[in-house]
Length: 381
Ligand code: NAD
View (cartoon, rainbow, N blue to C red):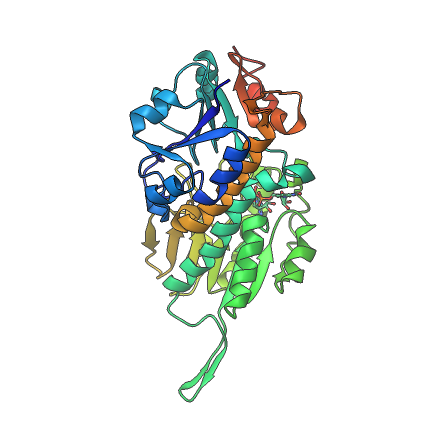
C-alpha cells in the first residue's frame, strides 16, 4: 500500500502569512507512514523556507502536483477549493458554521472536509489539537504589542529625572484564551489592567493574572454551552453597552476579544462610548471582521482615527501577523490531529469517534457534523 500523501498548500487568503506545517513536525508524520508534500513557497512568509522542509524530509512541489497528488490537503484557512477534487480530504480552519452552504457544496462534490474549529475543546485528549486556542493565544499577545505601538505614552509607571509617567490603564473585554493572554502581556509591560466578560467564572482567572474584574450591575451571567458565551438579547446588549461606556471612557487602551460561536461578534463599544474616550486612546478590535466587530466603526485590517482622536485598529487576523509562532503552534495542532486520524498508516474517518464527530464536517457525500447539518436543516447530501 502506498503512503498517504498529505500536501501543505500555500495559503490563498489575502494577507495570510501562516503555514499549516512547519519543518519540525515532518519527521513525526513520516514516522507514522505519511509522505509530506509542500507547495513551493508555502512557508516563506512565515520564514520557513523550501530548503528547510526538504532537509526535514518533505517533498517540495509546484502547486499543480500538490493539488493533483495529495490525498489530504492541509491549510490554515481553506485551500483553493476549485482545485480540490472528489475523494480528497481537506483539513484546516474552514469556518463551517459561518458558511454551511459551502460545506454542503463540498459534500456534494465528494470532498471530505475536516475543520479544526469544530474540535470538542474541553476534551482533555483533544487539547494538543486545539488550534483555536493556540491561535487566540498568539493573537492575544500580539494585540497588546499593537496597542502599545499606537499608544503615544509609556505602558509602565516610569520615574525619571524628566518626571513621572503614570501607567497606562488597559481594559480587556472578553476573557477567553486571547483575553487572558492580553491581560498577562499588558501586565508584563507594566500597565494597570481591568477586564470584563459575560461569563462570571472568568473573574478568578482574570484576577489571578493581576487584572481587576469589572462587574456590571445591569446584566447577569450569559454563560452558554461548552464554556462559550451565549448571544445577548437586544435589551441585555443595550444595557451592557450603556454600562460599559463609563468604564471604557476611564481607560487609555481597550482590547476587545468577544466572540459568540457561529455569529457576528457582539458590539461592545458603541459610537457614543468612543465619543467619550480621551484623545490619544487606542482600541484594538480583535473581533473585527467583514461582518462587523466589537467596536463601532472598526474596519478589518485597517487603522482609523476618529474625529475625537481615538485610534481604532481592526485586528481580526493578528495570529497571521506573528506568523512564525502561530504556524509553529498550528503545525503541532495539525500533526496531533493527523496522528489521531491515521491508524496503521491509513487515514480512518470515523464520525463515531468523539473528536472526529466535531471536526469531520463532510464525508461520504453528506454534511455529517451535527452543528453544521442543523444550520442546513438536517443532514444534507
Ligand atoms: P471566544 O473566542 O469564543 O470568545 C472570547 C470571549 O468573549 C469569551 O470569554 C466570551 O465569554 C466573551 N464574550 C462573548 N460575548 C461577550 C459579550 N457580549 N460581552 C463580554 N464578553 C463576551 O472564547 P475562547 O477564547 O475560544 O474560549 C471560550 C471558552 O472555551 C473559555 O471558557 C475557555 O476557557 C474555554 N476553553 C476551554 C478549553 C479546555 O477546556 N481545554 C480550551 C479552550 C477554551
